[in-house]
Image 1 (cartoon, rainbow, N blue to C red):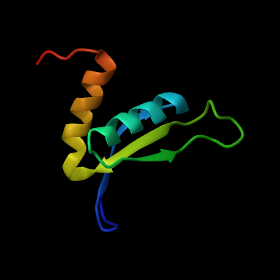
Image 2: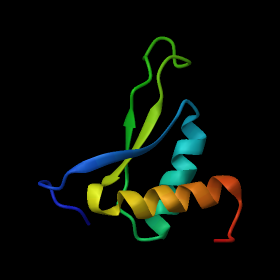
Image 3: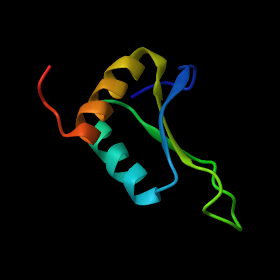
Length: 76
């Protein structure tokens, strides 16, 4: 697990809370530390997004995994 002094990078953002939670779970299942940052307005949830952050040293791996998961394409 990433420590408190670890730099975190945003790798994905979506206005859909359920989609963010699913991707969060998938990243954790792959062994990639991940956290959600809710940037949605508390009164108007259609304003803003849920961001997924990972340790910066895992950002490339996480972004690649998300890309494959979202596209459904497993070919390289």
